[in-house]
Amino acid sequence: MGHLLKPKTIIDVSNQLRDQGKKVVFTHGSFDLFHSGHSYLLNTSRKKGDILIVGIESEERIRKYKNPQRPIIPDSERIHMLLNHTAVDFVLFITGKVPWSNSYYVGLYEKLSPNIVTFGKTFGHKEKFTNKEFQLKNVAYTQIKELPLETGSTTKIINRIKTLL
Image (cartoon, rainbow, N blue to C red; front, top):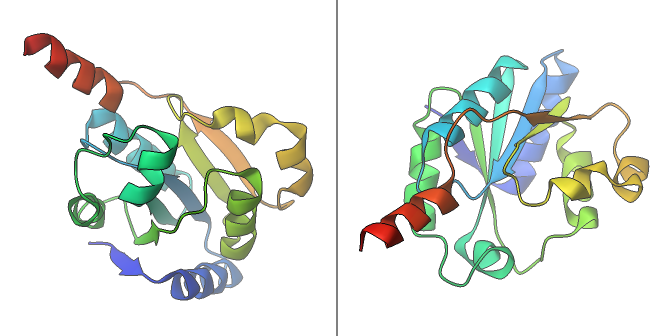
């Protein structure tokens, strides 16, 4: 079972684990309507290191960058699902009104100091990870890895449900 930690604590833990020679992996997202693609992302991310830290976006943030109708599942339930996933060691609840921006996430990665940051093929902001601005500011020792997703899409699930109504 994973542990939900406050930002300052998780940053300290991440850095201590790296200092102990542990390979830290970080991934983040909304994890709404948890499906096989989410589980695949978590399991595959975990296999890339010794420790998996998962950032979960708050309802407020998701509404700003995805859709005012999302997420379907409230914060507390999405956090609970992640905490009970066998691949997850720590969960970071990403709150606040900060919109998606390179500088916000680059700052988070610099503080967490993960060896690897992973994201799935359907991640809506992957272009942000490949542009020169991000790469120039990125922490030298952190690798960014896109993972191929085998199945699953929350948007596809929602659209399928709509066709059944």
